Image 1 (cartoon, rainbow, N blue to C red):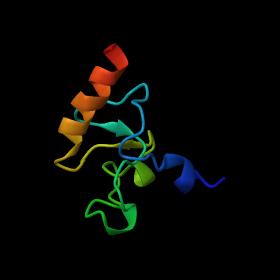
Image 2: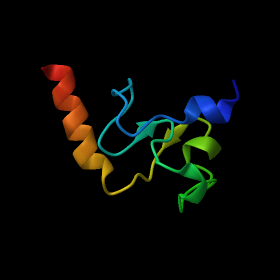
Image 3: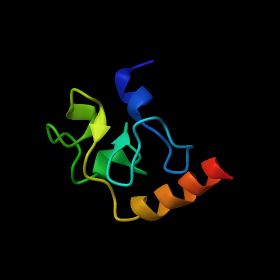
Length: 73
């Protein structure tokens, strides 16, 4: 499996170690090909050494809280 495919994480997938309201491990964009930040070195998960997305969609913080509550319940 290519590195690109392993970095794509479904938006509603359970949280992974390292996910926060501000960053995610891998890319959770619904369509990374049209993400405005795709390929930006140090920002995009596909172009960062640590494979962390540092500029998420505005919807992510709400989704993060939903997923975080699922873990604690």
